[in-house]
Length: 206
Image (cartoon, rainbow, N blue to C red; front, side, top):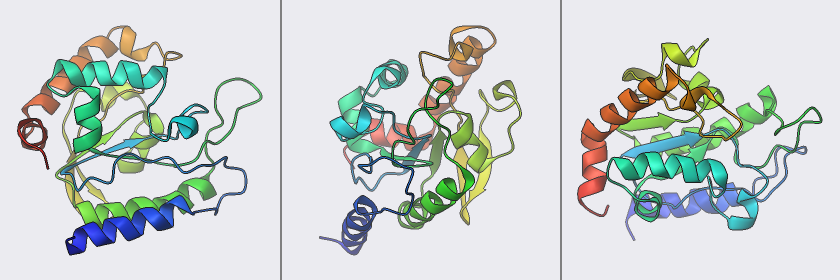
């Protein structure tokens, strides 16, 4: 086991036992502990993901993995080769007005420490923030139209990287199923397919 592998192992043990946010509903959900050049950041797990023990395990994930399969990685391979994190790692609970509750600032801050540790360890060449909450951690965003479909240079937790924002694949969202969302998503996927980090994970196991 290399030093990086040991650091990842210790990190994941600590992460799995986190109980900092009393309103969050466990368990902690994370993807495979792969030392990848790509870091995907979702928003927060839904109510199904805890039972499956992996992020994007329900309907939104089916949509997202279809996007990635079109440009070279099926779901199983993606999960094995890309580190999947999130703004918050536990289910926030339901919003009484419908949908899932949006994590509050303290919950986001608590979980940002785990993201900081992952950035320090992975030093990713490419970050894929999925959905407005995730995108807003990396850059200012008023409208998705302004940021999706472009490559961005970002300084995230002190690490310089490139980022390709993606819309949230939720069935409740119509953005990625209507123009200009359809075209902007295609532009984002084209940029992703051409990126050296994507080509690296497509070509060989890490």
